[in-house]
Amino acid sequence: MSDAFEWLYSDVVKEHFTNPKNVFDPDEKFAADAEGIVGNIKCGDQMLFLLKIQDDVITEVRWKTYGCASAIASTSILSEAVKGMGIREAYGIKPAEIAKRLGGLPENKIHCSVLGDKALRAAIDSYLEKRGRAGEFKGEDAVVICTCLNITDKDIEEAVKAGARDWERLQEATKIGTVCGGCKQRAEELLHEFSHIYGD
Amino acid sequence: MASRFVYMDYNATTPLHPEVKAEMVADLEIYANASSMHEAGRRARSRVEKARASVARLVGARDPECLYFTSGGSESNNTVFNTMYDLGRRGTAGGSKPLPERRQKIITTAIEHPCVLNAARRLEDEGFPVVFLGVDGQGRIDLSELERELDPSRSRGGPVLLVSVMAANNEIGTVQDMAAISRLAKAAGAFFHTDATQAVGKIPVDVEAWGADYLTLSCHKIYGPKGIGGLYARKGAPLEPLVRGGHQEKGVRAGTYNSLGIYGFGKAAELALAELPAYAARVGALRERLRSGIVGRVPSVRVNGHPTEVLPNTLNVSFPGAEGEAILLSLDLEGIEVSTGSACASGSLEPSHVLMATGVGPELAHGSIRFSLGRNTTEEEVDYVLEKLPPIIARLRRMSTVPASCQDGAAS
Image 1 (tube, each protein chain N blue to C red):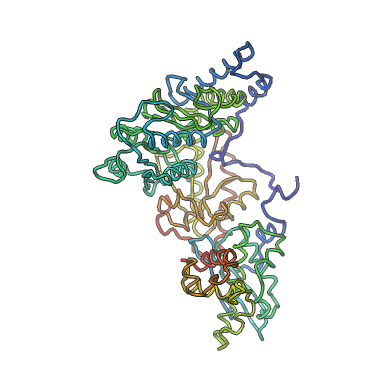
Image 2 (spheres, chains in turn blue, orange):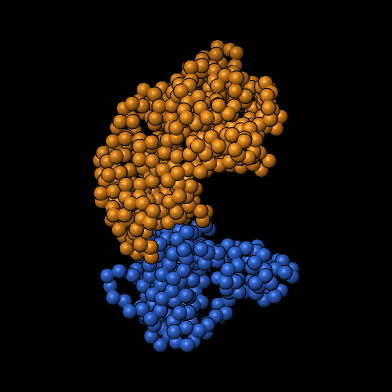
């Protein structure tokens, strides 16, 4: 019998789930320079990232999560990847890259790995904010969703954070999909994803 | 790879009883169509009727003719709701006497199996008034609320056509008061159906004492094969075929007899009835050993469901601070097989509708684990779970952002 039958996820997921790296130990002293938390318990997952940063380079990472096996594994692998990485580069890490490093994730598990990079970005944002550099990387990692009006995934994320929870309210906030409408499916997927992360 | 294999998911399905298996292997030689008139066919048919009598006995039906074979619980439930569709629309179903008055309202519960929920929603989509009764914190419906919903002068939707309440819940094991619910339904002139899929073989089931017009049961939950189930319908209760075709099952359910499945069902029913008293005592004691062991060894847990009106084999526990899928897969790595009410395990973003209906809140629902024990469960297996579980919960809680506190109830 191959491992595929023996375990729901890839070997990498299994390894990081059973032996996660850089988990914050409640008993350790970890003076974080930055902290970011996203997700909510209602949806069943929440993620906390703690970073030590020197000269815009991440020197140490700790994290905690209330989440499923893929949330634990994806955060573990992400925490390994960003150690020693510049905060600008770390800010641009995409969920797809994390999923790839994990040897792939089931479709319905992708959102779990989304939380890790969101929490990381929230931590970097808070770090920048504390140093009077608020919003410095904003937009750099954005992907254009609506080509007619040049509206990005970041614009959708901001709109959802500001309270847009359905298509009408998202359109009001961003004007997305008001020209050709070709982006609607992808935009609705993102709306669902961000509502999950920022919803209450 | 775990060296152990401890199956604690008997509410999902059961392994074949060795005696059922042995009989089915021998019965593989019987190939005749049980509807054929020749001798081989008549032999096959007599075995079908013997099985029907055994299954009827298991649910307390005096007349085996009232028991119809289906492909399983989902089909039985859908047959009842399909019949109600005709009764509500045309006042008659399957050639029954017309109802004396127009009745369309359906009353069921928020904690039913998805096949009842979705069959009821379909009637709702067709314009039928449908009420999904809520449950209390222990999973029981409120009889006074049922009484009010049955009274057209005190609720909306007009006279009630059907009351459908599951006998025992698959996730938390809570058992409803069948006789009382049935009395209220009958007094209001409504039909009474119960999905007894999880109750059969675990607690005494009696269609006469329960006053059931319809009762659903499934074979693979009682150590028999999959793909075969039963529908009890009181003599004279209308039945509209869901599967149309030949004259099998008195025209109520077409399709060549699943003879092998039916023989297995008959044997499984015979054994379930004979073993019931011993099962209840033995499995009930194991459940209590597991329950008290978990409560004693894992801090801040919540036992879900009813403390006494509960299936002897079902134990549902929430572990706040630890997420259910992560618990399930950690146990799986130790060879322990359970299920969870977490959304993460279902692929949807919604946690268990049953636990949510009991009001435990999303966090406790996401962190819930169902242990369902069975006739093969041993004391040693329970102790193995009690050894492996506490460090798993401790590990997940240690890396969790959520504190391990029970907001809505102490450990019970």
